[in-house]
Amino acid sequence: AQSVSQHNHHVILSEAASLELGCNYSYGGTVNLFWYVQYPGQHLQLLLKYFSGDPLVKGIKGFEAEFIKSKFSFNLRKPSVQWSDTAEYFCAVNTGGFKTIFGAGTRLFVKA
Amino acid sequence: SAVISQKPSRDICQRGTSLTIQCQVDSQVTMMFWYRQQPGQSLTLIATANQGSEATYESGFVIDKFPISRPNLTFSTLTVSNMSPEDSSIYLCSVYTEAYEQYFGPGTRLTVT
Image (cartoon, rainbow over all chains, first blue to last red; front, top):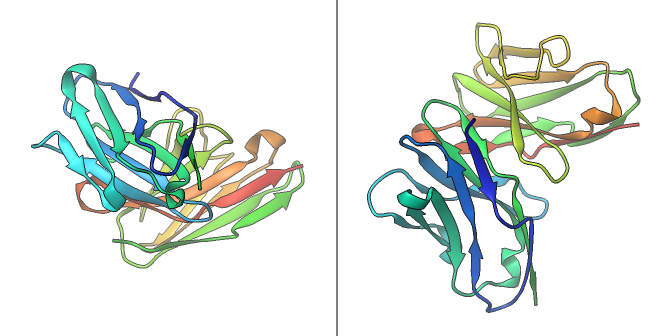
């Protein structure tokens, strides 16, 4: 069965530290990849997406993610986190149609 | 983009009762989706609500437990029936726009005692 794995459930960083959240999926075909973010008290919202082309995609607020097809990975990165990045981050994979599979989420807490 | 609202935002219910959750979208959409997010777990798709036809349920979810209505292109309801503590969860309504991007409602936090 298709699945999405996020490596860390909880991450605690100090401001200005670099961030990398791991995401791996199991599906051998063409995928559309997403990272969603949920800030405290807010809706889930799209952070960035990959459909095709350059495997390094940039999203809002300085986030980027790299699609490595050979590793079935789509890791999220940010060079320098801010306190306002405290949120829960979800990796998601769409394999076509209206079926998107979500990872379990990673809760990021950034210490000011 | 799409703006989605849900009612209620949260509720505490007794075992054996039912709760109906409403979802309103600010634009017409063909399909609306209901998810469950249990504590510490991923989002799980419950069903797809199509206007003018029966909802399509995912494995492990049945219509008797989670009846869905879709009376028009901007509104849907999900009922959680005969609730048990295991139904305590956040229930989310979602729609897709082009390119399979999803927009989510704020969620309904349900606690069953």
